[in-house]
Image 1 (cartoon, rainbow, N blue to C red):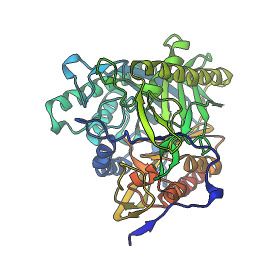
Image 2: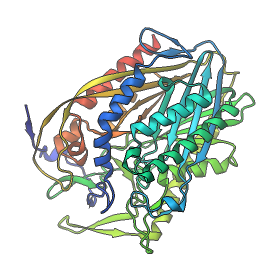
Image 3: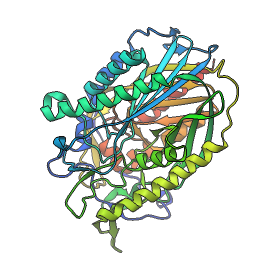
Image 4: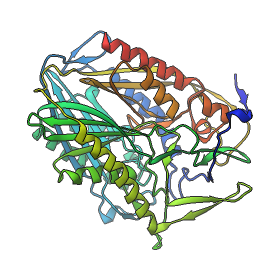
Length: 486
């Protein structure tokens, strides 16, 4: 039954400080398909693909009764590769973007132990269609012998990248997908070539680059800079070394949307493509090691987190009315500074991690499972509101990926999770190092926690998962993590 919900009004529950509410900018400019509309349209296809992958036979690894692939006693091997996605001038404009500021990359990490080989594919994209993911998996299988079931695909969630839609849409879309798959093929070929015995280490830092984006306006809770609200500023670092102690690959897990330059139009009128904060951070890290290390951005609980400073910003007056100001070309400085700040902290933590041994006995497991959640129809995300009726819309399958490497574990789901959900998963994890990831398998809409539903935030209105889904998913993840340790 549909239920009407109004935000809590208790003064004790209001934040001490609030900042400017931000106008909706996620629906896209004129002529572009909004990212939320795209994610909503591809959700069913992505879920179907994920379900097929979860149930696929595993050729390389011994498979346990609970669906985990295991390799506890063999030697860990690691290979990493990257390749820029070529975007020729003939493809532009593409999805409204008219120029390329910096390259989008495909980065691939191969992990091997005994008969198990797993691939992690990280794409500098907002999201990606199920069709394109299938093509990438085929390329990885052909080049590296990794089955579809053992290929984990995720996006950095940069907002300044063209959507990846079905190739049936146009010849331009066909060419765009072909460029992405070609880059993936180059990256995985390099990863295979670089595969070598390795060891792994973990560390955690802190960086004040993200901020909670929920604020209370006169018309209800909305997008802005909610500095008094929760924000997990931890920087999770995973370092893979060769047996001489030289770094091969570095994984950076941070909780923020890469949206510094989102919809910022240059003085020339151009709308530029950029890997944004994720790209700037990883670029800084890779430069510190002269390009010999491949860096990977793993976006964390980003549903309620945005960069502290964005090029397209808002101002607010005493009556909480706002205006939008675009820094245009000056926004690149905001991106550079924040990427440098986060990248510097990542490098600092990398340098504190000391690995040892020859990689023998490093646990390598991949567990795939799912949760069935109640679904709801998306609400009106064009403006804040103080009341909304959530309409039931059947059920939704929520695939879960859990990758264990030694003492660390990476937990991933499709939807953008909120901070409280990620913190709950970390608190109940039996592992010493736990990274929580959003945007696995191309991504889907927000999965809001109870607080967001109670306050009717953008995340709640935008969600296609009913209230309680986040808590149910977190509980299921906790059970799976406990089972892995037994």
